[in-house]
Image 1 (cartoon, rainbow, N blue to C red):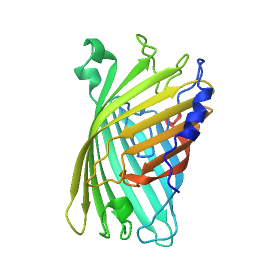
Image 2: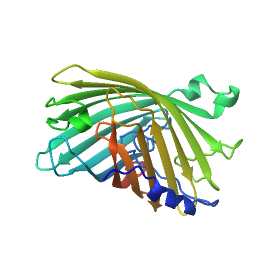
Image 3: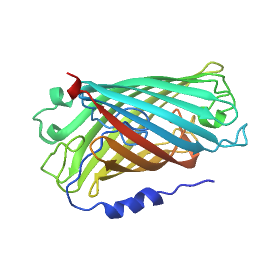
Length: 285
């Protein structure tokens, strides 16, 4: 079923009112600290392992009649005050099983480069990169752009994230406890290389934007968009997610995205469900 609806996550915005809340710590569906597939400039804390499991059903029409079920695992950890590393794994099943893995990291440069420089002083800026591989991807042309058995991916991005509401007061919104509704804006540039084992590789360079609204009831609403590259994508990337925190360690996400397992924009929009859990390290030392 073709769907370009933000309806479900947007309904959750009705509950986002001005009151205190606890921010969520959960890796994005893509792996790093981010919204869904779009990264932010924030980095995870060093005091915990962030883990998440995910499920979504993606329509596959090129060679397989049945939808593909995507089961995923994401693991994220800060390795310094300004750096994080992550890994993600996806098992795609629809009669023919395939595997997708990706590892990457992010380095935040804003504190060293832009500290005390007017508008940029409150803006976090980061650089990130990742390497991935889709094994046994033959027949998944609609999601990989190639009929090759294996597809390698490389991503490189620069991203800036800033609190846009309330202005003039910056709080530790990502991992702390902000008072009242907080709105976070993100913008960046993503370079992608898709390199199949058979045939030539494709590259793209596209901008992306995102917004997160942290509000009442331990709820966060996230929206994101990345411009389309007609050479390798069917559509621009667009996603929305509603995140609910349950206690200090557990979070649940319900969202929708048209991203393929390797992040390319597809025609079909699909819902996803995720469960996140933080493993604290402070007590171990």
